[in-house]
Amino acid sequence: MFEILKAGGWLMAPIVACSVAALAIVIERFWMLRTQRVVPKGLSMQVWQWAKGNQLDMARIRELRAGSPMGRVLAAGLINREHPREIMKEAIEETGRHVVHELERFLNTLGTIAAITPLLGLLGTVVGMISVFSAITTHGVGDPGALAGGISQALITTAAGLTVGIPALMFYRYFRGRIDELVVAMEQEALKLVEVLHGEREAGVREVSAEVAGERP
Image (cartoon, helix red, strand yellow):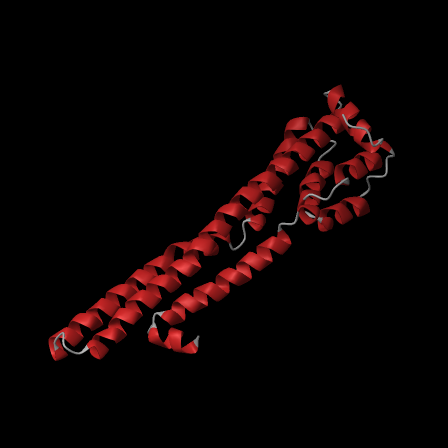
C-alpha cells in the first residue's frame, strides 16, 4: 500500500488527508443523525401530558431543551405558550433554523471533499503526463522504464481521487436527504404542539390523545 501511495506522487498526500476527513465526518454524522437522538419517540406525547397536568415549569423546559434537537424546538414554543399562536410559531421557526444548521454540521466539508478529490486526481493525471512527455523528450520512446513512472502516477492519482470522491458524494446526498426527513418530522411535531396548546384544532388534540393511549389515529 505504501508503495502505491509513493508511486502516486505528492498529490496522494492531500487525497489521503481528504479520505481520512471524509471517513471521520461520515462516522460522526451517522452517530449524530440517529432518529432516536434527533426526534425521540414519544417526546411530544410526554410534553402534552406535562401540559395537561400543569407540570410545565422551567425546570422541565430546560430538561426538554437539553435532551434533543426536537426538544429545543418544542421548548422554544413552550416558553412562548402564553403568547399568540403567531409568536409561538416564530419562536419555533427561529430555533428550528439553528437546529437545522447544527444538523448540517460538516456537510459542506464533506461536499467539498466530494468535489475536489476527483480534481486532485485529475491534477495528478496532468502531472503524470507531464512527466511522461519530459521523459520522452529526454530519453525518447525506447526506454519503457522512464515512461512507466509518469504513467503509473497518472493512473494511481486518478483512481485514488475517484475512490474518495464517489463515496463522499454518495454520503453527502444521503445525509442531505436524512436531514430533510428529520426536519419534516420536527415540523410536524412542533405544529401539533402549537395546535394542541392553543386549542385551535380539535383534531390535533384527538391525535395526540390517541397516541398517548397507544391507539393509531
